[in-house]
Amino acid sequence: MSLFSFFKKNTTSAPVARERLQVLLAHERTIVGGGESDLVAILREEIMAVIAKHLAVPQDKVQIKMDRGASVSTLEVDIEIPAALTGLRPAA
Amino acid sequence: MAKVLVVTSGKGGVGKTTSTAALGAALAQSGQKVAMIDFDVGLRNLDLIMGAERRVVYDLINVIKGDAKIEQALIRDKRVETLHLLPASQTRDKDNLTDEGVARVIEGLREKFDWIICDSPAGIERGATLAMRHADVAVVVTNPEVSSIRDSDRIIGMLDSKTLKAENGEQVEKHLLLTRYDAGRAQRGEILKVEDVLEILSIPLLAIIPESTEVLRSSNLGAPVTLGSPNSAPARAYLDAVRKLQGETLVEVQKQRGLFSKLFARRAA
Ligand SMILES: Nc1ncnc2c1ncn2[C@@H]1O[C@H](COP(=O)(O)OP(=O)(O)O)[C@@H](O)[C@H]1O
Ligand SMILES: [Mg+2]
Image (cartoon, rainbow over all chains, first blue to last red; front, side):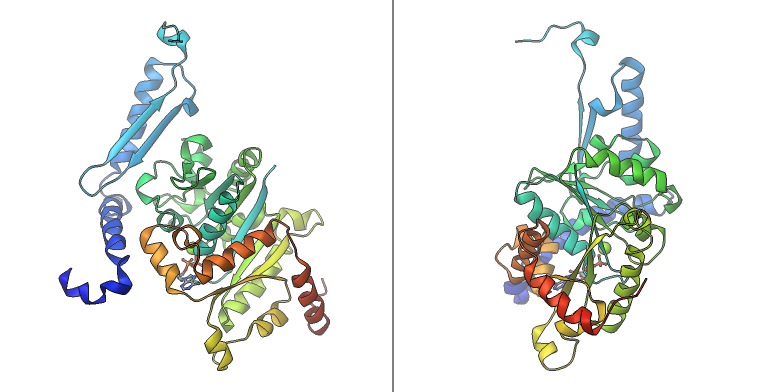
């Protein structure tokens, strides 16, 4: 990076671009080549299948959110479960 | 009920994706509910320009195939909450992009949004024809350069024949967006002048987006130029375009059109 610091004044956005691409391409290379499979897709489908097995909630009440990072990625699953299915009363 | 806007050009690399992001963000910032759809199946990029590439879970083909509902697939922008993105598929086969599937997606979105912006792929194949199919408004992105102008002319012909509007005997409202324009080079006679392009294509001018390093900087950062660099010359030009799209005034444009269409009447058909 220090090699390029000479240009830094005009190109401070380039390191951000570089980091974004590294994260993205590391992920895409595993799926576009077709060889290995897409971990997110697998998780997503299996999570959906497990939910469907235990709960009769419409598909669109399940939100799966993803955030890929350089060292850590997060997968957020948000399921709206009707009270009738859990047997719980609403808190308020 | 949403207006469907297609950002199209024929030629690749002229600024369609940049413009989709910039116009979408600017419309959303004015309080409109906006959904942007990337139609470039196999080569998606709108997610990257929007800085949403890490958040893609589902894509357009997933929705068409019924793997996901549209609400699950839309990615909501973290900066402007009325701005949403439906990414293209990166891996799946283009064959899954069906006429009927696209119609369903657009109809579903029409009820919930004010604007649906379709980022067309380059070319004149199915991806491009489906992106324009449902359009009410078209932004034809053109660079002041011969091959881009020729391809835009071809696209204008398709907007007048292959869209649902055209088939119903109506007109898609067409606007020219001249991008990557370098006034200095035009002055020196190295590239075509605005008047030249308008005269040849003979559709009203929406805006001229200057060539600017701010566009590159914003895409490096994953922000549409209208959000990442709102006071830059290209952002101001896009904001001006958005005001015109929202119907504030088209007077100046109509004047220009009148002048040039006398000289160069478009196809008689
Ligand atoms: N006004 C502009 N000034 C400078 N570069 C631009 C401008 N508009 C687009 N570009 C650059 O042109 C290239 C192609 O733009 P893109 O929006 O991806 O085109 P398309 O979607 O038509 O293929 C990108 O590198 C983009 O940063
Ligand atoms: Mg593009």
